[in-house]
Image (cartoon, rainbow, N blue to C red; front, side, top):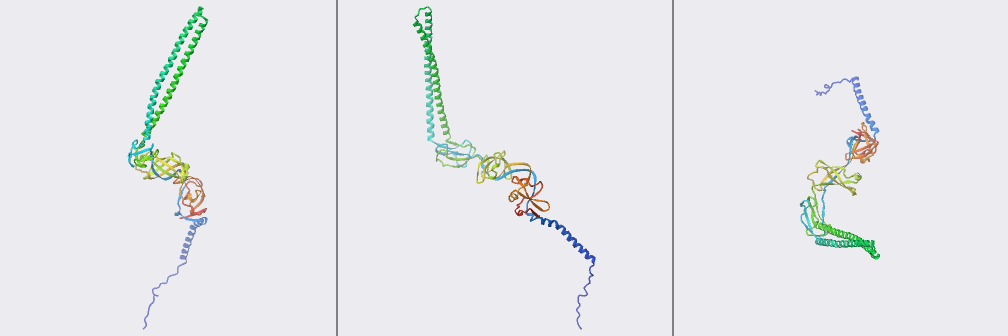
Length: 427
């Protein structure tokens, strides 16, 4: 008897064919989905058609055009220097003796070194001796002047006496002539004697007056010569006093530029004294800002996150290596615990403009030359537009033309747009 192997036909179930209504529902759903997809893709396709370049939005930086105040400034790294750091020089030739060491704290007026100058000391002694001699000579001249003036006055007095006698003889001759008891010759002689006496008296008085003037002139000349000698002595005294080199400020001694007991010549640098109470910032400004710099401009110095007010105190008249050297001085409160050669952030405020259109700075200024910008229209397209840029600060620029307040502008580099008129910004 054979073995019967059963199949799976008993497990199969015949399914009824789907009806026409179900097919219609499925077909309608697919058609609706395709229609929606086409409707959504039409704007995208349109933007793609209008744009020649497509750039992802994450690769762009976008900023809004705003209206406000623009502060034009320049920021640099400055170096702290002592505002007062005089270098002391030898006032005369001689041998120097140093009284302090490098790094020593000193006070104003303290003697830092002495110079032994025998030549200058000898000149001072000679000048003092000449001064004493001229003083004695002037006293002698005054005595002689009084004697000579007395002699001249004596001569004038004698001439006056002779004049009185001649007038008396003239009166006697007039009386005798009235009674005809004197000869004509004697009468005329009396008149001549009176005339001679008058002339002699007048000349004696005038001579005495001129002699007094001459003596006063000579005394004045001698006094002026004495004053000149006194000035010479005072100047030599000053030079000898300056042989003791004193500190002009409170501070510390910098480098010693000469050795102990060295022979120095006049105007040889000896040492520097640094005043550590007043500091300035030495800042190098790019040449492009040279025309805008002026003494007195406000500035800000940042130290440890705190901003200190300052002002531009000095501007170099020349440009070296495309840089302009400036000095910025603290105004009001000065920071504590700063050191020479410390690097500080310095910001010089060149100009402030109120109520202007501003745009955040970005690489579009360099890549577009500051003449073009790409403005977003809200539909994902950025359109190229010609613009005009005015003043520039560290964070923003002034917009003179081409943009309106509130517009969205691409501020990143526009090199990736390859000069296209319209760019599609994809999300």
